[in-house]
Amino acid sequence: MKPTPSFNRSLWVYHFNSGSCNGCEIEIVAAITPRYDPERFGIKLVGSPRHADVMLVTGPVVKKMKDRLLRVYSQIPDPKVVMCIGTCGISGGVFYDSYNLEGPVDEVIPVDVYVPGCPPRPEAIIHGVVTALAKLERLEGGSA
Image (cartoon, rainbow, N blue to C red; front, side, top):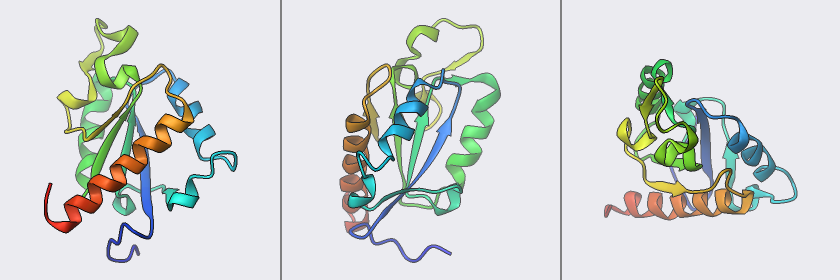
């Protein structure tokens, strides 16, 4: 069981693919390798949304993933931060006019941090998570 949040210690991240081409996932995997070493910031990927502080969302929201995205978002305890990774999640990208698209992520759930790129570099993803850490510290302190 996760202890009471103390964001000066660690940041637990859950990744959700809402319909992307997997380019962003490859960069997320690259970002968690020893070359970039995100654990020096206390960043750790977790396998359950119930243990997460930050939700990384990649890809535009397709029709079959909308309900799942909402369910996973509701399972993350407060305070939480949502990061939208990649151009497809931010605007729909090359899939913007697809018949199967519900829209960008921020039309389904609130997004706090955007990391643009197709795909974004691992350094940008880590910078986004560190930005999310600062936002969580403000939320914990009482001011949003």
